[in-house]
Image (cartoon, rainbow, N blue to C red; front, side, top):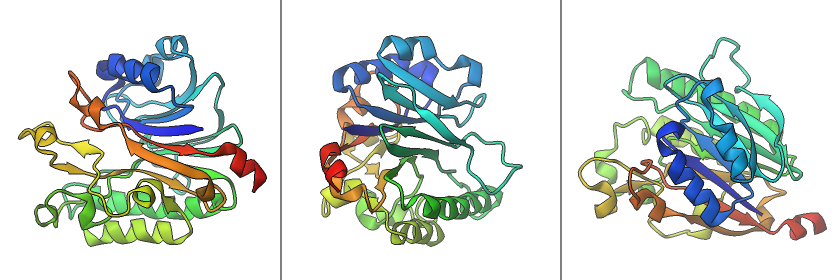
Length: 261
């Protein structure tokens, strides 16, 4: 079973690239972020024509998350991260697909830091940590754009990012506290010593220079982690015409092994 995450940076502008990638790779489940489209503008007809059913949580101009499943409808179990009834930003959606709980998320960027946006990021992260602990006993995966650079290995020039909200100590600490609950960082587990990136800025030929960041993550719960067989970045998608600034990231799970466990 292949589960992917892809920050599309505007589903309207990137729909052709998304559909091309879906046709080429046929992932079973895809978590999308930064739809940048209101609920009624999600291109469900095109998604269904590609063989996928979907649930989505849209927002005009900003944010927006979705879960796609090939050949079946994701069974929605949550919309919006619990813990703040006044939070109107579309950043979290949750569903069951083939017996696996999928949490699709788009964690706040938080810049400039310090400031109100950074405070919101930290509060949102704490809510995620609280909610994630409740999912640990399930076969579950948290997938999305975390806007967190976990370590120096995950950024091309760490010294340039020390004051950025993606790399500040408070954010990295929150990420590692999340992992400490028992979650497995799939990409880093399969590539323990490799500089492997998921995001390249549009400016200064960042993709051409491989001046990237690893900020898109797939975290596996303890019962799902033993089924992990592969984790990769489809970085070539970032090099195509009019790309997102992120590349798709995916894992492969041995579902039969999960059944045996």
